[in-house]
Length: 246
Ligand SMILES: [Ca+2]
Ligand SMILES: [Ca+2]
Ligand SMILES: [Ca+2]
Image 1 (cartoon, rainbow, N blue to C red):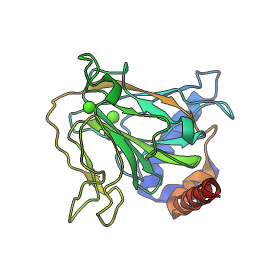
Image 2 (image 1 turned 135 degrees about the vertical axis):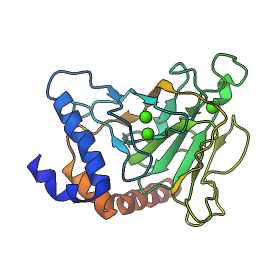
Image 3 (image 1 turned 90 degrees about the horizontal axis):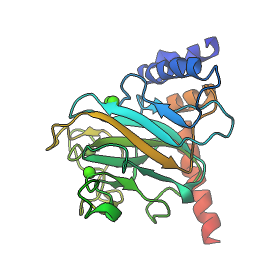
Image 4 (image 1 turned 180 degrees about the vertical axis):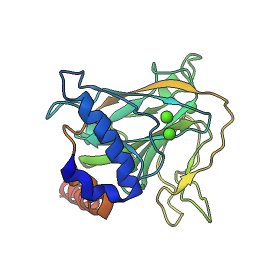
């Protein structure tokens, strides 16, 4: 791990690196590649998001298993979306808590969110669960690294102090919602820290279109520290959009 030491000087990189160290021990053997289990408690900022791993060069990441240690816990995971059109994430079948799911860019810009799964809105067993549906016009358009967030209903992402504006547009709980277009800065700065549900416990987020990072990514850590990944991601998005428009 010595080659990663230069990146450990920032607090954020240390949190990510701690997860890498744990994960690197897990991937040494023939472990299951398609499931990531939360190591300790995943952070809730861009710098402290927990990086997901697998042990294969092209292994899909089929699910993330984690837990809320308190009703105000928020967990962010760094994921690699390899097929943006097929990307989805859902807690349906994965918990009985009133979850919310969010997708952010690596820099913390809101992409889309869902509180209560639209297809299961009338199902008493799952109407409080969440799905970021595949193929949504609001979904990701470029392959790359993203932050996937989960919280309990009502604990919503904001752009932080002093304005603490909600990062996503308001709407029905069963809607797929995009970013709030009228705020500045429009990046994650915190969470409201409020919820109507005193719940805690385990959850599973099922995924499609996602690959975990195959090995400790020194380049990624460096890019996170410098913000280069954000620039690359944005350039990629513009390029993809331009290609799509052409
Ligand atoms: Ca947690
Ligand atoms: Ca957390
Ligand atoms: Ca919900």
